[in-house]
Amino acid sequence: MKNTINCLIGLQFNQKIELRELKDWIYQFNNQLEKKQLGKVVTASVHKKNLTDYHKNLLAISINSTAEVNFDKLLSAIPNLALIKRYLIVDVSNALLHHTEYSNMSVEKFSHIIEQQKLLYHPDQTKPMCIIRSLYQHYYCLEGIVLWYNKMSITINKGKYYARELYCEFNLDAIKTEEGFKVPVDATITVNEDEVFPQFNQSQLILSVKESPSSCKKINDLMTNHFTIIVN
Image (cartoon, rainbow, N blue to C red; front, top):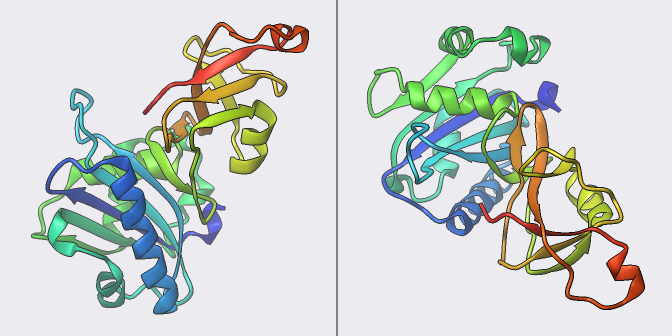
């Protein structure tokens, strides 16, 4: 998938925005890209500015552009630009980032490669390291809440699912407990909140769950592992 990406966009919003609002924003952006025949959003993930921050207001997006990356045209496709404090658009057509494993690529080296490409900063030419760090985490699938993946919006609504359904529907690498145990495909997963999202974790797309006691009395249910989604 990485070799189809030729543009990275990092955005820092002025204030806290709910995940649902961000997903709507990405949906509008993707529609504008398609309408203007500029390409499609491949993946989008949300990040914190600092590890200690509670709110996440950085959005990292990878794009498969249908032609040479044109900054003016991309900017014209971004909805509600006034909401954005800073942004960085990078043409990575010639960066060859996909040829280097993240384990051998430090964020400093990634930053250096990014700076050698065609760039567009806003509002000035100061180096937005928080945005570059979020693009690094996004590109190598290290961290971030994933709202859009494999050119598709992710929506997991309230309900009960078999793990195999979620694996297949969202191309998940793993459904794991907080202790790191992988959930079997025949386990049942309960989602108590509308629109929860998977996360990037060390080059994998995962859903985090916790074990929950079953309230069902059927023999088959008692023999099946039951888990609840951990809300983002």
